[in-house]
Image (cartoon, rainbow, N blue to C red; front, side, top):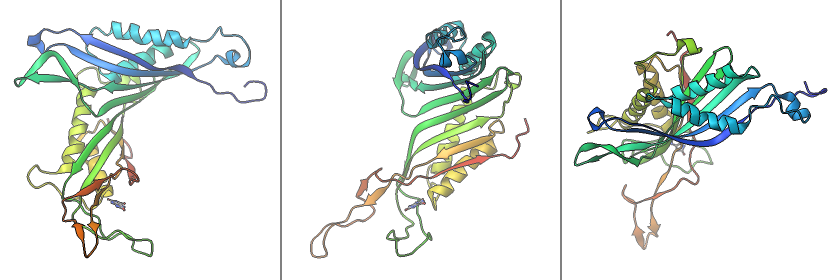
Length: 306
Ligand SMILES: O=c1[nH]c(=O)c2[nH]c(=O)[nH]c2[nH]1
């Protein structure tokens, strides 16, 4: 309490950019690089700094920033973003008595190893598109919440999509169709069931591998088999099947939130009856994301048994 007012504050540092290289001989797969954009925010008992000029309990945001680099240096073995976020969260909540909770958010710049003449390069990378992120909340008690996600995952099918049987009233112009392009930019966040630092898997479970697995399941479900695909009756149904498949395949994921905007490809018809300049035959489209449909859902297991 500050006087008769409730005060809840938090502070930290955002956009802390760090790149960590782990050196390995070419025979062992070559160098590994991670480039991370880190945000740390702590809940800290430093009330007097808000209500008076007493800063004695503040862990300076500059020190928080420095700590990111110190911890990156100390990670002599390759770590995943999720593990690094836990390391940071545990650090702040255990070193400082006044810090009760830390939230660490990391977005990765997707550097991907290049191949030259079909051979993975030992130290060459190019930047990919979709981004892996994580948000970790650590409390002083060791209680934990770990989420990972993907952003900017753009997927499109030229066919095997339709939309029909929806509400038809005086506001409806959209015709039923069983033939359209469906395109989206998936944002997904999934939650791991580890609720205490003591439950964290020691080694072989690898968050980075799980990210790749989830990404593959999302796109395989979206597209269907390579030759024939799979029919999508709506973005809603495809979203549901994608989330369900992730939860079915990975017992160590307890819930998944999916956001899949419907990025429209509008049929192009130009001209008039007398002068049909361009008549649409499932071939020429006007792509637009303004406006776009917004479709999102969260799927979870009632209770995860792990
Ligand atoms: O897959 C779709 N879901 C909708 O809810 C919707 N609404 C719309 O106009 N087109 C579509 N497509």
